[in-house]
Every structure is written in structure tokens, then in C-alpha cells.
Length: 212
Image 1 (cartoon, rainbow, N blue to C red):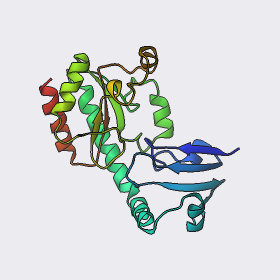
Image 2: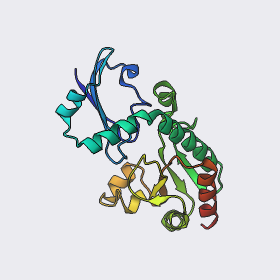
Image 3: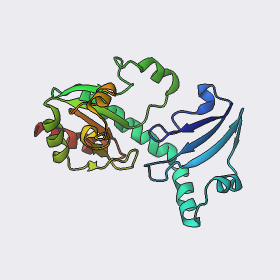
Image 4: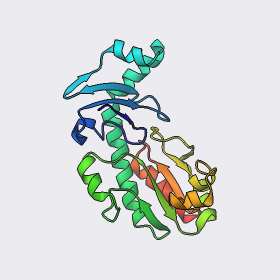
């Protein structure tokens, strides 16, 4: 069987197909991210082919873009490790904050997928997660508007920290029933934690929550 894995929010550095039991797949990674890890891996058993001509058979890339792609791949592990480390510290901070009612991240022991997280993501599960803020939609908007380091963008996995309110932006076209089915409420805020200095990230979150 041929499996196609499209991972935007979880990079292949964190979830390696062979470790998950797949022996043949095409891995396409990209989407919203800066081309930090846009690549195609043709995996057959334990043979990983990364030849330039095979990449060019899939993508027609300009010389400049391909250089950016290669530079991104060369520093991928360093940046992803920083993303994961920062995200886990933010998860820990938010999970203890009195104005946060819930943090949705599989690293937390009470998350329903915590055991799968431990099995498949020993290096961490990326930097994108959501949390629910006390006070509903108005509180979520006030929190987002008060942030200084975070950029209000629907993108994910950027080197800079990002924030969005899914209920009124990325998922606003969904019906109330669909939103409820996906557990998307007016109080949910989505964060994409960047590679900035972690104390600056937490200080920004702290001052924004204080204004809610």
C-alpha cells in the first residue's frame, strides 16, 4: 500500500513514518509554514531517497526557492526542538492559570490521546494547540488584542508566535452544530508557539491575561 502523509502541524521530524509502522509512503510537508521542511521523501522499507531530480519531478522550483528549502531543511531539527520546548512550557504555564479553563494538548496527562502521544511523539507533538479562556468570546478577543509579541494570523508553525480565534475566523463558515461537533467554542484561542525567547512569550501571555 502507498500512504500519503500531509503534515503541516506535525513535522516529519516529530512523526517519522517508519517508526509508526509504515514501510512505503510519500511524505509531503508544507502548507502555511515558511519553507522550513517542504520536502518529498520516497520511503520504501528502510530506503530513503532524496535525490534532487526526484524532487524536481514533483515540484517545479525556482533556484532561489530551492535554496531556501535546503536552508530550511538544514536547520529543521534545531527549530522544531525550540518550537516543542517553548510550547511545552507555555502549556504548563496556561494549565495553571486561573483564567484558563482548559488546555488542549496531548502532553497533558488528562488529554484523551496522551498515551498515543507518548507512543508516537517521543520528541514532542509540535507547537500548535488551543486553550479555553474564562469569559467566553469577549474575553478571548480582549486577550488576543492585548498580545504584543504574538501576531494575529491563521498561519501555523512559523518562527514567530501566532494567535487566532477559530470560532470567528478560520471556522466561521461552519454551522453551530458543526462547531459543537468539533468542540470549537467562542472561548477557544489557538496558539502557534514560535522560537522567541520563552520568558518573553510567557510574559506576553501573562500581561494579556491580566487585562481580561
